[in-house]
Length: 245
Image 1: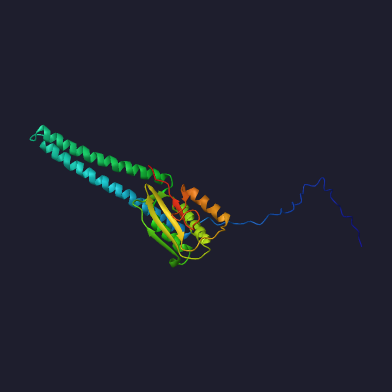
Image 2 (image 1 turned 45 degrees about the horizontal axis):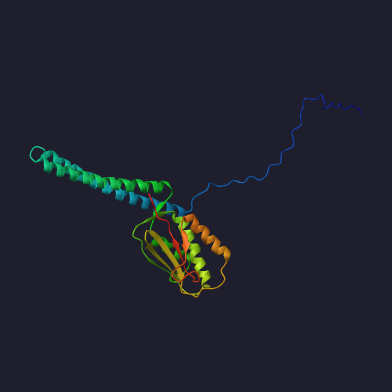
């Protein structure tokens, strides 16, 4: 039997490189792209429709006034050769009065566009109170009434949060007893929302509930007032800020 010596190559001079040990890779988490809930998409459509209705009203008014100016200018052009100077001056004043109406509509349109650019929207406060009341429990436990002479501009989501916390706070003040009701009205130029309960007021109220409610009201830019019963009652009033151009 022939014995052969096995030659072992020095690793320091060899060109062969051993593969590196595999790196430990953490678990890869794939996050799906964020999608808006269906309710948010519907809410966006409602806001767009409200803004569209508001702007369309201004546009239709301007269209009507411009047509009126065009008609009067045509009549004035025809009367230049026959009517007296006083008649022409009167016709010109009529045209200028229509232009003043156009200026007023254009000013309102500019104000509404500025409000929309500032993330405000035209809100039917009574409808919003009904929506919040319906989502807080059975419909017969919260009654909503009243109206405002004009549309209020603001952030519906922020106001809805304040209304939700206000209803909860009033329920806690009344110890969960009685029927709650919401009354919307205007005091001078300020829209107001009164939230009250027919239940008897309790002495102790959760301070955190009061703090959360007041923070939500501050985000709206509103302030909290006692209702006609006074500070010792279970009711409260949210006074909304005056909308300015």
